[in-house]
Image (cartoon, rainbow, N blue to C red; front, top):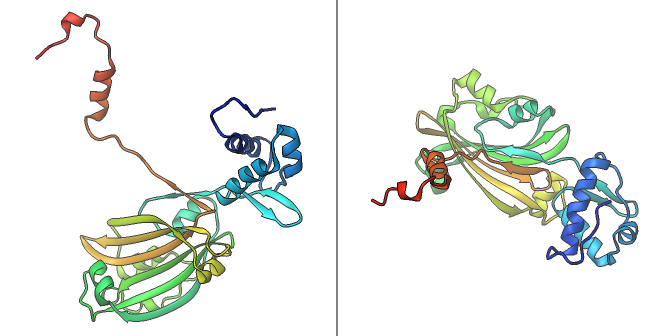
Length: 264
């Protein structure tokens, strides 16, 4: 059994957090009940407040969840949200989940200044707005508000999208295949309406995405999404700049003969 080291500079609640994460990986399955606060206090010689703080952190991170009167349970693993130009449907299918969507609203609006800048339109040009709740295996995952240049996608506002990939509809009906995209992500807090739709407490953390998709340099789509912070984590592919690897290796290689090192 792992132990709490009272001499460690790492705070006790964080040590317990690491122990619990290891325990979840090795000993428990999703929806299993973990040991109670009282049992964890006795097992690791900790105060109740310290144990509760560690559990609170893991609940806030989406690793555990509580059911009042029953205990604390292991949550579903988070989905790694990769920043790639692909549809929600394609992404969920690739991960082995069943994607779904619920239509919330559809409307036609003038672009106005903000959308006009995002889509390269005049303020009075029409824009289609489609709002959907995205699900995986029936569980709410994200709220998605998509804006399209109406002139490039006539009739899309009436297109059935239940259990269909919007990317597929765009390709098959309009011949639109995105070849470029820009996306930003920031932390946010779910307001009461969004929280109710996503099935999370008001004030919960969400990941706010803004994405602009282009074809041949021309903007076609602008999307604003709110992803559940307890069900997603961002995954990045990190690339080394050209020439960086070779230069670092050369800098770290010791010289066999100091006299052989050039001075100019």
